[in-house]
Length: 164
Image (cartoon, rainbow, N blue to C red):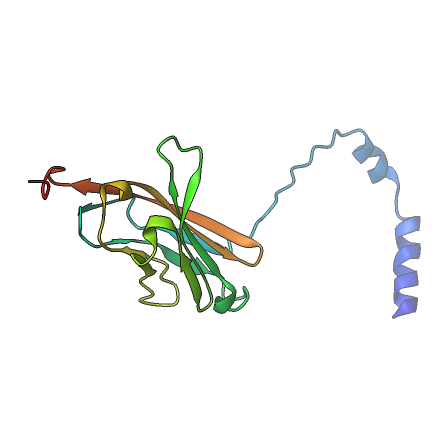
């Protein structure tokens, strides 16, 4: 193998240099293409707006698509937050990692993950109040990969119902 490589190197060094002179007169331009394999984790809501009624139960959709080469599903972290009215902050609603989960503030005892499949991160919220109206974010983190889906919750019906 080594003698063959030596012969190739010698033949390249003895090759006709007229081609080199012609090529040196040409201007070079090079286009470099960067090919990315695409996202290894993709989070989608399927619908941008969900409508429900005060006192009702709603499911905020969130589906996960992931590259099977990523780490075990049990290492995924799912975090639901709600944007404040001025969109300057996020309020924690629910966090799940593996079999552990935690709900926050006024959402305690009212929210849980639907988990109809391992790739379902939809949030079920019951006993809806007027304060639940707003924009929610489903963020999924899997190792170094992460993605977010956004869903708006709108409430319909008479605001004064039940106050008589």
